[in-house]
Image 1 (cartoon, rainbow, N blue to C red):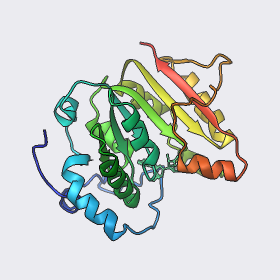
Image 2: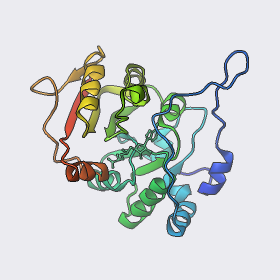
Image 3: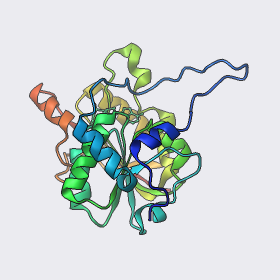
Image 4: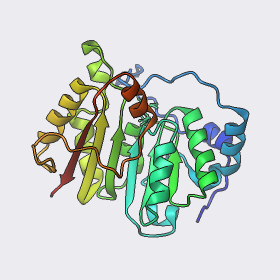
Length: 250
Ligand SMILES: C[S@@+](CC[C@H](N)C(=O)[O-])C[C@H]1O[C@@H](n2cnc3c(N)ncnc32)[C@H](O)[C@@H]1O
């Protein structure tokens, strides 16, 4: 049930100011996992977003979401961070009507494309958010509420001096664990070997997580994961793909 019928344009105007300041009032520069890409929202995407935002869109808020109210049911909720243009996320939602999906992406044209494709596919079990995922996790996701977290081909930040911008860091995984139910899963994939090694290191050093890999590192690519746009690009460039699948055990 949707309480407030507002368009995406209205939501942007209402967006909570999340800038943070030091004790003496100076603006605190945050290390972000993304640079906002340029790329125009097409007229079609804008119209779809404004028309269907009340159905598919959720805004950042300062209290936890009520998933039962949002989806109108108790089905498990799977969160995907950085869904890009959203095609693979919509396909997953369409193939798994017994689950609810929540997608977060900061790239507005991607959110527009995802909503347009959801309308085309008549998908009912998906909601999207256009905001920094680390703030959504911190402010809006109730503890112990997620059945799973998907992170497919996150920005690799190739240069060593930029590795601190990678989203997969110990404190990020700790926050995800806090938001996962037990058992809940974390599924990551990347086409950048050095990032795969960092993911493995961070995940296996979290005491709440158990690696499902028979070889104690990566799993074979699951058939259930639809091919993503960045994965396709990686194939064209001759990159390998590493999938990691961990379970929260306690
Ligand atoms: C390399 S792209 C991969 C997109 C898609 N998963 C795929 O495989 O095609 C990474 C995406 O993550 C998004 N992203 C990065 N950091 C984010 C954050 N903190 N919150 C939300 N989205 C983020 C970027 O905008 C970008 O679209």
